[in-house]
Length: 77
Image (tube, rainbow, N blue to C red; front, side, top):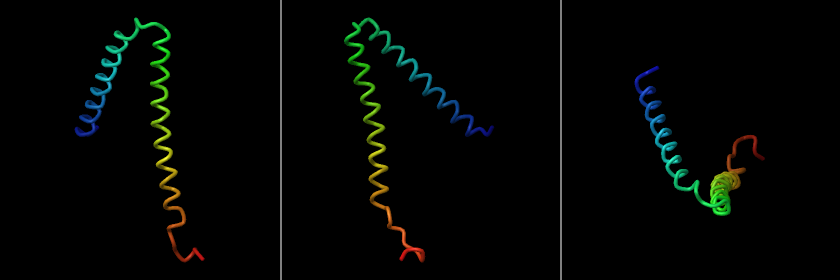
């Protein structure tokens, strides 16, 4: 493994470790909330993931529609 690839791996691992630590910190603060509040939070988090995926899909569809049929060559009549 090259040194640059190794350093990228170490940095990525460090970011993942820090993210997990942050998640654990939030969990410690949130786990004592009542079930209703936890469910509302879970709903909001889930909606944010879905919205993010929908936004990416919409941009892809938009780009396909924008460029569909734009490539012309001898096969186009």
